[in-house]
Image (cartoon, rainbow, N blue to C red; front, side, top):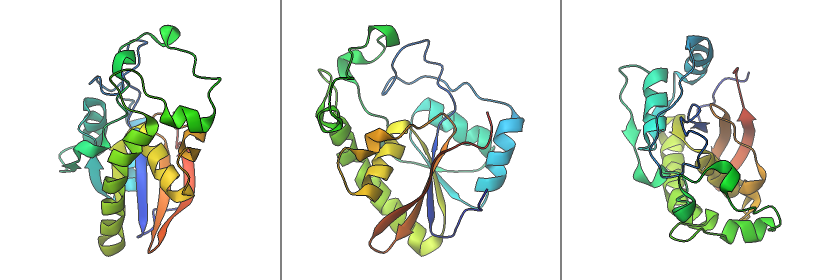
Length: 194
């Protein structure tokens, strides 16, 4: 695997969530942490990165398992999408959104929640600030959510809905190069081992 570059922003989706078969965007659940056989290679690859985490428990636990005793920043803007009335709903009882186009899906919000585009509006300023820091100081790892990674991909692709076309597995890496005028995509859904 290619080493992390000095101008790289890496978004790591947290370890699998202990969700009990229910949707948890803003629902704060624990991580189901793997052993060091999985975390060790990630730690080795990411050791030179500064670390920023979503405040979600599953993200903090992932960051702490990767880098025990190492400090990291938290940014409230990096929370996952708020799924409103669908939060904590069993996966099999979620509405079927398959017929929606990607543009309509990006605008869809469950009652009391936020759409993907709403979440992107919250996350993107944080990603741009962190990218500016990367260009000045060096690589940064964000431990966050699938939605955060998709927001980063949306930024690189410069299209509101295209981030939704990517799968983002737990403990997968989304690697973006921070350029003066935007981002390029190095890799998506990159898993070292699971």
